[in-house]
Length: 86
Image (tube, rainbow, N blue to C red; front, top):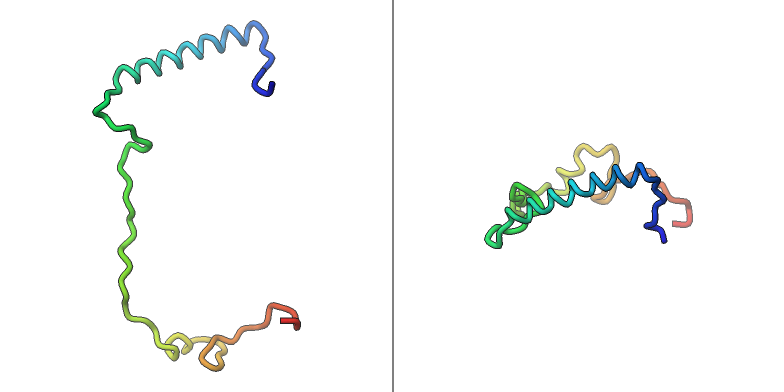
């Protein structure tokens, strides 16, 4: 029932012509499509552009905390954002 749209005669005539054009274009594409041409969702092959994960040099705790405004026990110290219950 949701797909039933009330159209007047002028709209039916206009949309019939548009639908005919769409069906004709689909037929043209079907004539060109051959079994040896794979279906594609994108005209350019996509690939992952990220580099592979490799272990590299890491910061020591002292290096990580050297510019911190406040640190304690090898951790960043920040203002509490939770209530006293935490």
